[in-house]
Length: 289
Ligand SMILES: Nc1ncnc2c1ncn2[C@@H]1O[C@H](COP(=O)(O)OP(=O)(O)O)[C@@H](O)[C@H]1O
Ligand SMILES: [Mg+2]
Image (cartoon, rainbow, N blue to C red; front, side):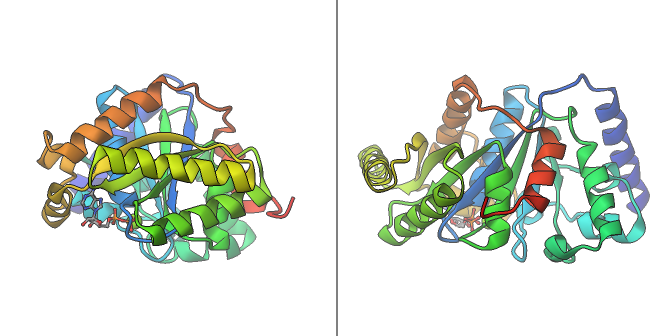
């Protein structure tokens, strides 16, 4: 099994090394409240981008509650933590999920990212920077809420997708994230997803109200990326450990996420920092400046 996994990783590495130079963009998927559907969105959105011929890597940076591997039905052997412990290359820890979707699991031990000693930090930077040019998108599946760690990922990404449900508690927490981010950096590009809508009307109204509030009280404009209906197939796909885009390709949630990916690709992309620029900003930039 382990030999097979190694061979697969070697294949991924070779394929990626031969790849054309891609303009790697980094998107943070985040939320205020937990359990609103970030990871399911991140995984199925990533698969929709793959269907549009993009090379995509999901980096699970939910420190403490990483579960992208569970949603993809894979058990990674190597993680960021073992890369540092065993002196592996980043290509040893990149796993290949369904449809060629790549992913990196944080794993326990990645939780101390921001207190790595110099040697580990340099290794982390060196290895992760090597991904530049090999994928079109790195999607960061972040944790929920306003931790300093989350804020660092959000502030360093090229753009942020903020996921909320129409529930007042989720909306209040999402607003708190926008407020905190905006008070630190007014130029962060944030796009809104309303997940688990009971109707189109509810999605449209929720997004319009949220937009009105951020514009009025923060003078911050947030565009709406789309709405995803509440769909029982999502929970079924989680139980099967197979993303709904693959297990129920015609379900309403799958249709909505694919539509969102198409719209996302049509929108003008904000300027990008590149992987090394992202990592340096995320790790070292003073959050108050
Ligand atoms: N569109 C949806 N329709 C129905 N249930 C959903 C939907 N999106 C998410 N869920 C439910 O919410 C749960 C939590 O989703 P998850 O993606 O793990 O949230 P988060 O990453 O924000 O914590 C899922 O297991 C699923 O049961
Ligand atoms: Mg999650």
